[in-house]
Length: 360
Image 1 (cartoon, rainbow, N blue to C red):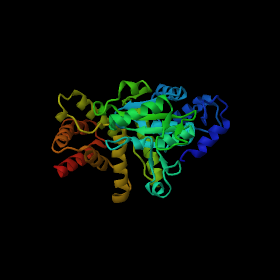
Image 2 (image 1 turned 180 degrees about the vertical axis):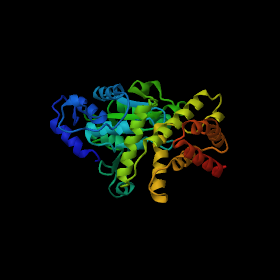
Image 3 (image 1 turned 90 degrees about the horizontal axis):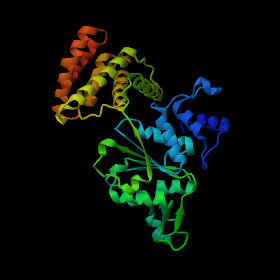
Image 4 (image 1 turned 180 degrees about the horizontal axis):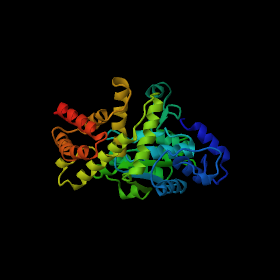
């Protein structure tokens, strides 16, 4: 819905070959997700919406065009769900046919259930059946999404095997009209967190029915800055907030996360690592918290002290372990840097100290 007008325009100028009943060609889908360039020769600019290596996007599109399931796997906050949404929106104009995988997800959630009152009144029929988002996607020949696949139990995962291989669902409760066939264009985009490995591992049979695309953590500072700035601008527009994001504060945020990641990489035990994944998504969360706090409880100016307080408040999840890690970082890294570099760092140092003291 958000990009409906842009998608309509792209569809109107798209003369490329389209697999199945896709609304856009693979080249136009890539352009929609990664943004346009001058060499594309378009009359208007198409903004970049997902930041990452174009090969990940291209392989994802090719997988879906080959009629196989797509599994996006990576650490929390790497943009797997966002990429899945964009792909679904571009291919079939519907990114809402979603099943959320949890320990409580059942086979009914990916197949069908029943409207009990209608069954009591008129008996079991296709009218009294409640199709799952996956079954709805099958009937429409569109993309269904399965979030956090490895959080669901093995029997739920196994139910996907026949859907992906046979492309139909049987309804044994009905005597007639008891098979739902997948229409051409149906596929599933699933996501899984690499940190969930070992929770409910995928069977080899299910793995064979997915193409895996691993989304790495963004470590390039320039790319990460673009992602954070893009998401922050969206936040400001959504809340109708007029507030400048000082480049120096963005640099401090990026540097702080880089420092903490390096410390986590060199840690010898889990107690020496923050529980936070220190992902790009968490950076955005820290900045969002600081911006909203500045807007509602400050002078509508983002300051280093507020940013430091938001960072500490967002990353402390275990006490006293996380507090001790951040306290060590503030004394060992932020304090020397504030003396050496000056600028906004002294205020950032003070704000972090106050937040740590308050939480202690």
